[in-house]
Image 1 (cartoon, helix red, strand yellow):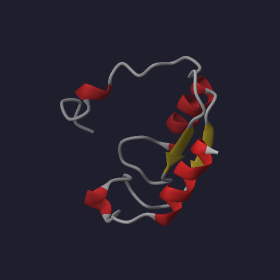
Image 2 (cartoon, one colour; image 1 turned 180 degrees about the vertical axis):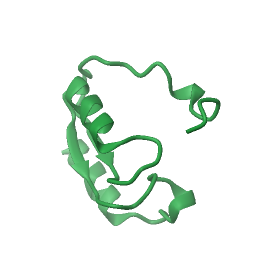
Image 3 (tube, rainbow, N blue to C red; image 1 turned 135 degrees about the vertical axis):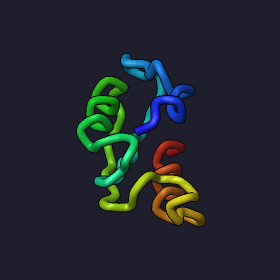
Image 4 (tube, rainbow, N blue to C red; image 1 turned 45 degrees about the vertical axis):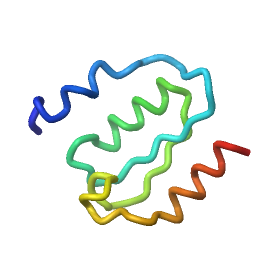
Length: 78
């Protein structure tokens, strides 16, 4: 992991969020382990969804149109 590449994401807030949230994790993300994602989700009082082995969740790993992501977003607005 290159700390220079993740510099803009620190420090992460470690307190309950004031809004409904979902933390989505991939089981083989090279930047955030499932255990770390679970820590964040618990800290934020966020629902945790593990989508399995999909690498880092972004366009570079093949995510384009993402129906499952759209469904998760709908859950936040209901």
